[in-house]
Length: 224
Ligand SMILES: N[C@@H](CCC(=O)N[C@@H](CS)C(=O)NCC(=O)O)C(=O)O
Image (tube, rainbow, N blue to C red; front, side):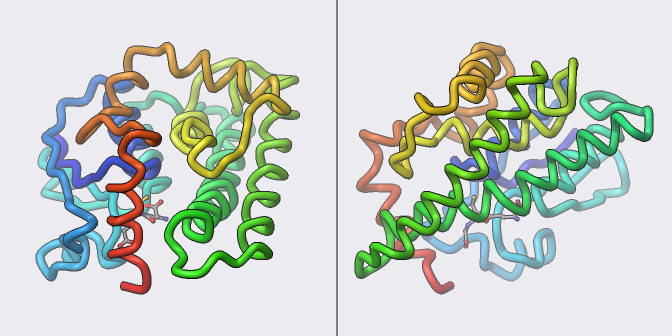
C-alpha cells in the first residue's frame, strides 16, 4: 500500500496516473496548497522541499520518496513495468523523463506564474516562458512524429511524466494545433482509463471554470 500526498496539479497527477497504470493500491492524502499544508513540519519530514507530490511505501519500511520523477522511477522499478530493462532503451526513457523534469515542467510552470499569478504583468517574462514551452513542445512533437511513445514502441514513465503538463496547455494559452504529433499523443493517452482516473485525483479540476480559485491558490503560494 502506498500513501500518496498530492493536490490537483500536473506534478501530482503524474503519480496518481502511474499508480493507476501499475494497479498499485494507494491511499490519497490531499494537501491543501492554498493553506500551505505542504510547508508544515510533519509534511517536511516526508518532503523536505515542501511541495507535492510525495509517497510513503508502507510495504517497504515506510520509505518516503519526493520529486515526481524519482517517484515514477521508484514505482517503475518496484513493479518492473513502464521502464525498459535493456540499458539503451532504459536510457532513452530516462532521457525523456529528465527532459520533462528539467524543461517542460519548470518552463510551463513559470509561464503560468507570470501569466496568471504575478501581481504585475511583465510581457517579456510571459513571452519568454511561453516561447520556451513552445520550443520544448516542438522537440516532443518531432520525437512523437518518429515514435508512438516518447521512449519508443511502449508506454513508459516518460509519457506519464509529460502528459499532465501537455494536457493543461491551454491554461498557459498555448494551442496544440501547431504540434500535430503531440496532439495525437495527448489525445491517445487521454483515452486510457488509468489516465482518465488518475487525472482527477484528488479532485476533478476544470481549468476554465475553476480558474479564479486556482489563481487565488497560486497567489497564496507565491514566494512561500
Ligand atoms: N520538482 C518537483 C516540483 C514539485 C512542485 O513544484 N509542486 C507544486 C505543485 S505542481 C507545489 O507543490 N507547489 C506548492 C508550493 O510551491 O508551495 C516535482 O516534480 O515533484
